[in-house]
Length: 197
Image (cartoon, rainbow, N blue to C red):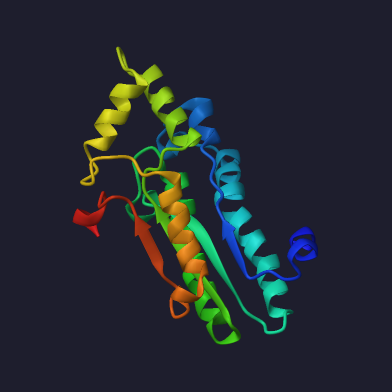
């Protein structure tokens, strides 16, 4: 925070984009009863506690500015909207990011700070591509391309999103064009979850 303020003089916006699927990569998908407390702590530390810790310090900085104001966007996931089998902890963390964002938006709305959430679907990132690789390795005769194609088949838009498309949404949420938008969960998923939300 200090480095950002030194460089720019103030903090006008922040994007808390934290995610880890370390547990998935270490041991593959597992049912809830097969998970340990340490697994819970590792997933929550990055996916939820990291977002909370960043917001805590961002808000303190924004409140101390003249004028006190700012915009924060936190990354959630469509997995946090309705859960996913063998991904309970990740889904719980991302659902919690939504609750955290909406609560904080209400706390600071009259103090000039807006808080919103990007609810991300599938975007072509190294993390997503590594998931396809892992699933392919555990599927007889599977390839990352097969896994990607089966995933794309579930997206009405018929494709995986580009990271720039997510970034454009975040930039808009941080801009003055979104000055009356706070406490919002912006779902960006090519209509993947439209039938169930």
